[in-house]
Length: 365
Ligand SMILES: NC(=O)c1ccc[n+]([C@@H]2O[C@H](COP(=O)([O-])OP(=O)(O)OC[C@H]3O[C@@H](n4cnc5c(N)ncnc54)[C@H](OP(=O)(O)O)[C@@H]3O)[C@@H](O)[C@H]2O)c1
Image 1: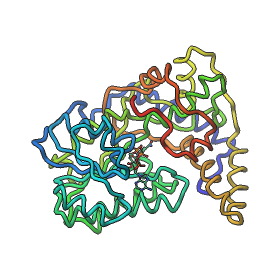
Image 2 (image 1 turned 60 degrees about the vertical axis):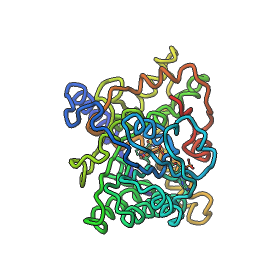
Image 3 (image 1 turned 180 degrees about the vertical axis):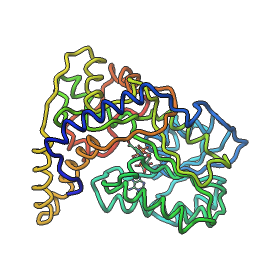
Image 4 (image 1 turned 45 degrees about the vertical axis):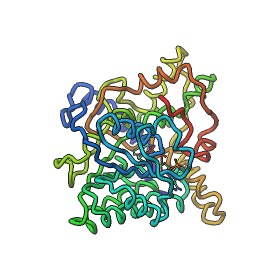
């Protein structure tokens, strides 16, 4: 089991700690970063690996707006006609194949490579290895060979306490950039907290009258998620900025009550935005721990059960580990939920959503 069991004594202590942390954040100003676009390009080519994902679809238009020439390495031809890639070149290839990435670099001569790659099924250990480690490694190798000026690795704030499979690979890539490739390649590592769709995953269920699930009091941890448009602006600010070279940049959204939340706050926000009375489905962490332990044991005998244990561990991880980073941007989680209010999108159990991967929210908000 990846996590230690939380005792009854800890339960109250965690709630108190989260309340104090939120109070401190809400009464302080995060001045690490200054929000706003800095730096414009002059047609420099920026190659995106993972540019067809949720964040990539905001980074590409931001690069175009700021005068760069984005090139998206896409697995599917259909990317060529997509509105978000207007002004970008789309090269077809699979980043898990080194030759495809090398060809993209040779054909387009980028000055910068940005990796936003991430396996779409975080519970699939082999897919994570291929995408979160090998494919990014292909990008680094091709970037060194192509003498690109900067490699920007979008990592994960959770790398500070890596307990889930993709986080371990993200951290491994960070180490490889800092160690093995030091001197060969100038790098920038960005560690974003969480994205709004993750915290709004059950919005559709709540809209349909279901309860919102919390562990015990639902206040084990605090997070300041970041909007993808704000993150895109932040990423593009680092492009070819000499001050960004060799730096690890943790980043989240504004430290305001509308954006710095416990998971219970996120649920309360859904009820408020939808104008419904709050209804919580309280599951004890002790019973969840038992389920994880049983499934982990059974997973050793029946391989098919191992990914199910992962779902449960991931749910616990996100409920108990703080993700608070210096603030950038102006958008808030509440603002995002306001936009979701009148939308239709897939719903279903947490397990079904994990099975179908990360593509569960509309990508035009
Ligand atoms: N989700 C969060 O809350 C969170 C928090 C912190 C950091 N991050 C990190 O932020 C970055 C961007 O996240 P995101 O939400 O934009 O990711 P995403 O939407 O899941 O996009 C993942 C990208 O990786 C590609 N990819 C996935 N599986 C692949 C495979 N088997 N072979 C080749 N390519 C594959 C996808 O290509 P296709 O479009 O062809 O599938 C897509 O371009 C990632 O590095 C992620 O780990 C995420």
